[in-house]
Structure formats: C-alpha cells, structure tokens
View 1 (cartoon, one colour):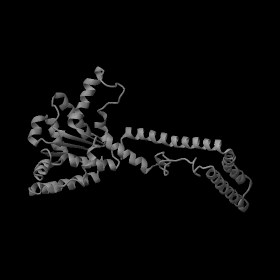
View 2 (cartoon, rainbow, N blue to C red; view 1 turned 135 degrees about the vertical axis):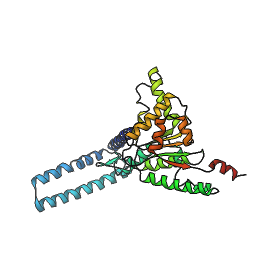
View 3 (cartoon, rainbow, N blue to C red; view 1 turned 30 degrees about the vertical axis):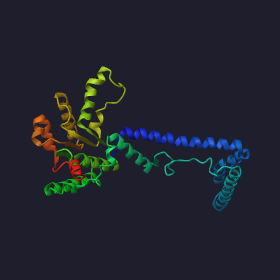
View 4 (cartoon, one colour; view 1 turned 90 degrees about the horizontal axis):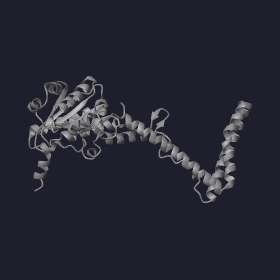
Length: 331
C-alpha cells in the first residue's frame, strides 16, 4: 500500500516541526527554571556528566568492580534526580515542568518508531486521505453500516439485488489490492445507492492505507479543461502541480455521475485517456452512472464503451429512489 505522496511529504514535515517545537518549548522552560532556581543549573550539569563518567568507568574497570561502580553511579543518579524534582516543586513548579511534552510519547512526535510508522502518523494520513480523496463530507454518513437494502423491500427483486451489491462492495473494499482488484461500473437510476456504496468503498480502502481519489465526472473533466485552456492563458498559479496527475496515479479512482458532464470531443478524449491509461497500468477504477447501456453507447465513442463493457464489472441498481421512499413514509 502507498499513501498519497503529497499528504505523506506534508505530514512528515509537520511531524518533524511538531517534535522540534516540543523540544524547543522544553528548553525554554528549563531556562526559566535555571533563572528562577540558580542551584538547579549545577544539578543539571552533574546529571549531564553521568554518561561521560560511566564511559570512563567502562574504560578503567572491569568485572565485578565495574558492575559495582555502575550500580553506585545509578544510585547517585536516582538521588540527584529526586533532589532535583523536590527542589523544583519547592519553588512552586511541577516536577516535570521542563520535560518535553510530546503529543505522542510513542514516537516523540516524529511519526516513526525506528523505521516503523507510528499509529498516530498512520491516523493522520488516513484523515488527510479523506480530504484529498474528495469525500470528507460524505464519509460521515455514507458507510456500509448506514446502507439499508431493506428500503427496497417492496420490490423483492431489487431488494435481493441491493443485498448482493452491498455484500460485493463490502468484500471489494476489505480485500482491495491495486494489483488484482477489478474495475466496477455501477449502473442505475438516481437515488438507488451508487454514490453511497462507492463512498463506503472509498472510506474502507483509505482506512487500509491506499490512495483514493473520488470526484464527479464534471469536476474531473473541469480539471482537464483547466490544464488545457486555463493554465496556458495565465489563469491560476503557474507553479502549482498539474491538477490531472492524481487521476492517473492514485491506486483507486472513483468517478461519480458519469453522463452529467458537458460532452464534446475534448471531454470524451480526456475520459478515454483516463480509462485507457488506468486499464493499461492495471489501476482499478469505479465509475457510477445513471445512464443505461444503450444511453452510454449513444453518448460515448465505441473506444470508451468497449472499455466500460469489456474491462469493468457491472453492478446493476434497481428500485425506487430512496429519497422518494423517505418522503412517502412521512405524510
């Protein structure tokens, strides 16, 4: 698995700065203590020399003699530390006043324990993944747990289909692997749960540490239009990275509402480029659309529909718009 590269770089820098800030704050508090309690400086100097004294003992002694000398030095260190804490408290400060206050003691705010990623850094990457994926708001309500196939119970066929879709999508998310997972084409009328289930997939896949990008077809193609017609005419920041790179590089791309975008030769070409490139790179893509098979064929060139029908596994959504069902159940 590989988290979003930009998120990783940004957060790593933030964690490094956080760790350095915690250490600097502790140094500032220690200087405050030294100014308020002059004798404390001597104690700290003595404590800082312990390591050097232990090194000298190791060079000069050996065997039981060395062991006894080290134990004596350890007792001296413990007593000095206790006297230091008592002195600080006697002057009205907490005994740990100048200790470094890390937000995460496990990794000392570095994000790593040795070479292993700390859980706090992993969590930060997951939260950042929600934001960069484009579904931070949807994730709060559209999960597998909140998807209820029973709303289609009045139509037994649609009800069974929805249960199968839920089971399949949940398994897809829990076993997602960029190298082996298939492409999905979620087809059905509006309000049947396509966006809900694709959002739920995105959340689980992000939580498992993969890089996901989720957006509407309109927004995706708007980024391509910006790169083609906007950047070259002085619109926006010329130094910013290409907005379209993420669509070719992320481990899972989810395109919502295909068919609602303005269709022309340019947008159709961009759509084909995305689909074809990701298929060739074996990177999974999920596409949601309200259009049926015949409508897709009429709207898009054969080279796109051949990819959609040949390289994507279709999931059919049928039934009644959930919003209509909710309205009818509340007179």
